[in-house]
Image 1 (cartoon, rainbow, N blue to C red):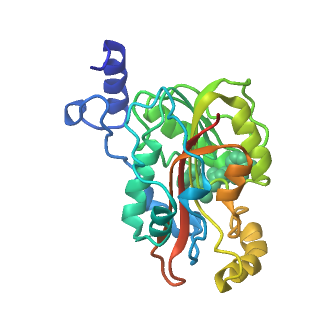
Image 2 (image 1 turned 180 degrees about the horizontal axis):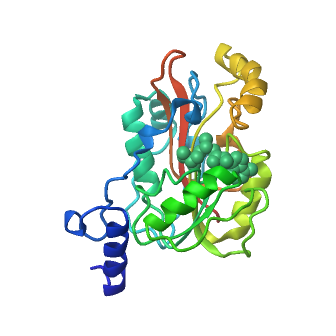
Image 3 (image 1 turned 135 degrees about the vertical axis):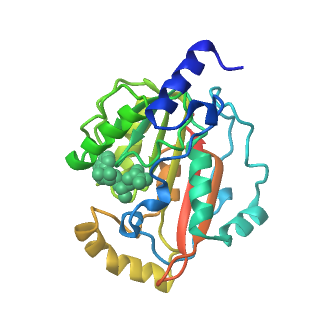
Length: 277
Ligand SMILES: C[S@@+](CC[C@H](N)C(=O)[O-])C[C@H]1O[C@@H](n2cnc3c(N)ncnc32)[C@H](O)[C@@H]1O
C-alpha cells in the first residue's frame, strides 16, 4: 500500500510528465515521453560479437533490503549460463529488459552518465534520483527533463571516476551504456563502491567485448581507437563482466545476450543486477 506522501509524489511526477494521473496507479511506470528506442543508433554503439562470459562467472548473494521485487534470476549454474550466453534478442526486447532492470532500484539512486535522461521512464516513481553527467549540453537537457519528472536535485557536473558524494551515501547506482565510455572503468567502479551503502545495489547495462581469440574481438580491438576518438569515448572491446567481478561486485541477476543488429550482426550485451558486499 503506497503512503500518502508517495501517492502525492507520484501524482506530481505524473502531471509533470504530461500524463494523466488517472492513467496510472502509484508504483506503475508512466510511458516514457522519450522512449529509449528513440536514441540514435550511434549512441548505443553496438557491435557484432558473441559473448564469452556467463552467469556462472558471478557469485550469487542476498538481494538488497530495499528491493521490492522477488529475485528474477531463478536459474544458475553452467548449463543455464551457456544457454543464456547464446540467447539472441531484438532491440525491443532489450529495451524491455533495460526498463525491467533499471526499474528495480529503490531509495537514493545515483545514475552515472545519465545522458539526457533516457532512463526516467524506467526508474521507479519513488526513487530519490541523483544524476551525474559530465557533458554540459547533455546535462542541461538532463536537468530540464529531471524537473519534468519531479526530481529536485540538479545533476552533478562530474566524472564517474571522481563522484562528488560522501562515502556510503546512496542505496543504488545505475549506469546504462556508460562503462564503455568512462576513461577508467576500474576507478569509476571503485568510486561506485565507495558511495554505495554496504549491500547497495548496482544495475549496469552495456555492450561488451567479444570472446577472446575470435575474429570479432580482433575487429573490436582494431575499431576501438577510432570509436574512442570519434564516438564519445566509446570502447567496443571492454570486458565489463570481468571488470565488475574484479571491482568486487556480486551478481544477483546477470544476463548476457546477443542483440540483433544490422549491418554487423548481433552485439554482445550485458545486463548486470548485483550488489556490493
Ligand atoms: C552512450 S551515452 C549513454 C547515456 C544514457 N545513460 C543512456 O543510456 O542513453 C554515455 C554517457 O556517459 C557519459 N560519460 C562519458 N564519460 C563519462 C565519465 N567518465 N563519467 C561519467 N559519465 C561519462 C557521456 O557524457 C554520455 O552521456
